[in-house]
Length: 240
Ligand SMILES: Nc1ncnc2c1ncn2[C@@H]1O[C@H](COP(=O)(O)OP(=O)(O)OP(=O)(O)O)[C@@H](O)[C@H]1O
Ligand SMILES: [Mg+2]
Image (cartoon, rainbow, N blue to C red; front, side):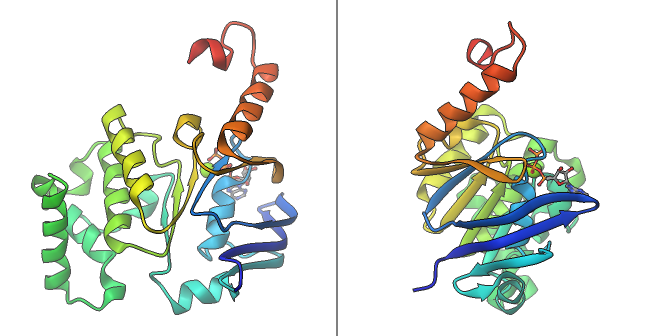
C-alpha cells in the first residue's frame, strides 16, 4: 500500500527564500505533531499537502497520488485549519461557513444549513448559527474554523496552530476532539503540551528535520535547545 503522505526530495522556494531543500519524509501515523521556531516551515509544509504551494522540485504524494491532483479530484480529502481564521472563513455567518464544508457531499444548500444547525446544537452552540463572523472574537472565529473542519470530516486533518487564540476550556475541548477523531491528524503548534503525548512529533528547524520521534522525547529536545538560546530569567522551563 502507498504511504498516506510522502514528501520526496522536495524543494520549495517562497519569494526568494528556500523553505525546504530536498526534504524527504513520510507521515503515516494517526497523530503527528509539528513543532519548531517561527519561520521553520510548518505552515509551508501544510500548504504543499493541500496543493496551495507547489514545490519547485520533488513530489508530495497522498496515497500515491500527486497532492495537487488529489486535492482537485477529491476536494473533501484534505482539510486544513488555517493559522489565521480570516484566511479560512469565507461566508458571513457561522451556519453558512459550516455548510460550505458539506458541499462535497452533494447536499443542497438548504440541507447543508439544516445539518449545520443540528451540528451546532450538538455542540451546545445553537445560538451561534446566525451570528455574523465579524461579531465573533478571534478565539471564537478559531473555534468556528475547527467546527467547519469537523463537519466537513476530511480524511486528513491539518491543524495549523489551532490552539493559538483559544481559551483554556477551548483548548481542552479541541484536544479531546483531536484525541477522538477517526482520521489522521497533523497538528502544528507552539503549545507543546498538546502534542507531547503524540506517538510522533517532528521538529522542523529552518526547513530541515532536526528531530523526529516520540512526542515526549522530541518536545524535550526542542525545549532543551530553546533554553540554550533564551536569555536568563525568561527560560521556558522557569516561566511556564
Ligand atoms: N508568502 C510568502 N512569501 C515569501 N516567503 C514566505 C511566505 N510565507 C512564508 N514565507 C517564508 O517561508 C518560511 C517558512 O514560513 P512558514 O510560514 O512555513 O513558517 P512556520 O513554521 O509556519 O512559522 P510560524 O511558527 O511563524 O507559523 C519563512 O522563512 C517565511 O518567511
Ligand atoms: Mg505557521
